[in-house]
Image 1 (cartoon, protein in one colour):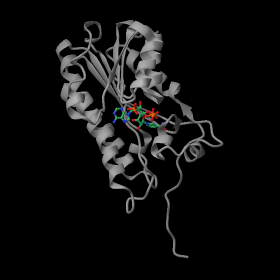
Image 2 (image 1 turned 45 degrees about the horizontal axis):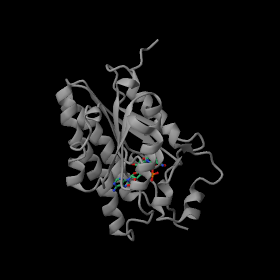
Image 3 (image 1 turned 180 degrees about the horizontal axis):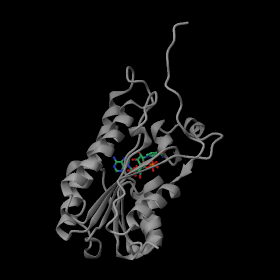
Image 4 (image 1 turned 90 degrees about the horizontal axis):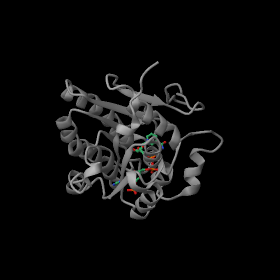
Length: 257
Ligand SMILES: NC(=O)c1ccc[n+]([C@@H]2O[C@H](COP(=O)([O-])OP(=O)(O)OC[C@H]3O[C@@H](n4cnc5c(N)ncnc54)[C@H](OP(=O)(O)O)[C@@H]3O)[C@@H](O)[C@H]2O)c1
């Protein structure tokens, strides 16, 4: 029987805690007795989260693509939240599904800014403190899109390939410390992800999940919780999951007709 890590010893910072995986992860750790810090741009949702969870919850309202704000994210924390030992770099997502030849460059910029810059700022802002205390865990939310291409996935797949490799490379740098790094790489999961990708078009977003049982945010939160509560000598490098009704197709071949 494995002695799992006591979640009550954890102070967990989750970026993008206003919906989807981030909100579910904050609730999962809080329910298990951890202190939680949730970040995001939508202040009303952060305030509601704080009201719901109470004193073991703190919220930080800033845009993860704002380098100065992100690098200062720990500076205003109350003392009881300052010894962070789990960081979940989750804020991100896809914008658009257009082919590379006609995609909107603003969409590409936004995906790079949130999924690459935002993740690197999050790690850079939090890693030194964990190194100093020689205890911590960084979890980066990637995607199966980083491993398997699909039409219209262009930059989204690219940024999630980045987060996978970034997670592995950070591990190399901190080898010898008591700090873990995990890349969590889910497939089809119903959150606000598709509403954001299709810029508020709910009908289009609903079509993505039509006729199939996708994973939900709690499924991913549970996987993250599992990785973070394994005994300290165990590092789960990457965890990939899909809805049972999702799999791969053969390679596409364009034939002359
Ligand atoms: N759902 C899926 O199918 C799926 C599959 C694989 C991987 N993922 C990844 O999982 C992560 C979470 O996505 P989700 O499915 O939970 O989507 P979601 O429901 O849209 O949640 C995205 C979260 O990211 C935050 N965020 C986005 N841009 C931000 C910014 N500039 N600054 C601060 N926070 C920002 C949002 O908060 P605010 O809008 O309040 O700022 C929100 O809390 C993303 O990295 C996504 O790429 C999702």
